[in-house]
Image 1 (cartoon, rainbow, N blue to C red):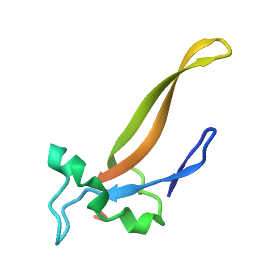
Image 2 (image 1 turned 180 degrees about the vertical axis):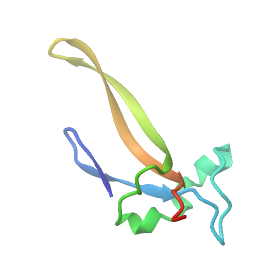
Image 3 (image 1 turned 45 degrees about the vertical axis):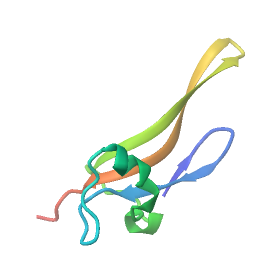
Length: 88
């Protein structure tokens, strides 16, 4: 489970992008992004992603006027697990 930090605390979905018995692997196509929310959550979003896993991170950028002038914030929106280390 990833919690984004900042002014607003929110849970970030961790999608399982690996090939599963009922879903092909996530391929970064337009259709894959349109249907991202239909992918299963990795371990029901209840466990951390193992170290050394390959992931993709989706975030948005926002510009705002800070106390020292213009500032930029990156806001984590989702994570896609693409591969996890094998137990070999």
